[in-house]
Amino acid sequence: MVRWGDDADDSSTEGESPITSTATGDKTGSGGLTIPPTHTSRVDAKGIKIVTSYRAHPTNSDQLLKTITKIKVTTHKVRESRDVERRRSWAKFGQAALDEDTTNVTITSNDDVYIEDPNADTD
Figure 1 (cartoon, rainbow, N blue to C red):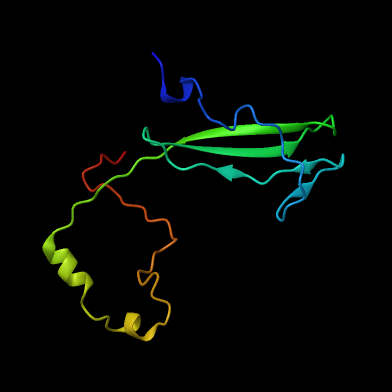
Figure 2: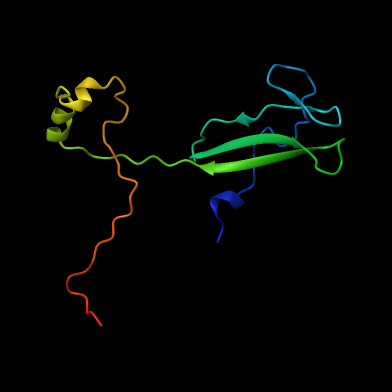
């Protein structure tokens, strides 16, 4: 069985040589090599995004290691009822109305909650 990551890579970045210019964001390795910045491609028709990154070789300072990571991007559409959409437009009240930070008005508990089964056999 062939998986999506086993397909032949037709990326144009595969045969390119490392960039040796000193553009902003570039890092210089210990051997004097210029390490190019990480490149992220757009999501293609199959839903795959390719991230190409470079780093210095740990033992040979004259070489760069190129890492190509393929990421499968999926989109899940969530259906929402009209009532939920209407409630989202309501004005905030209570402590949520007073807070300036509106990114998260839900308070989560970090405590462990243990629930005992009342029908469990006790020995």
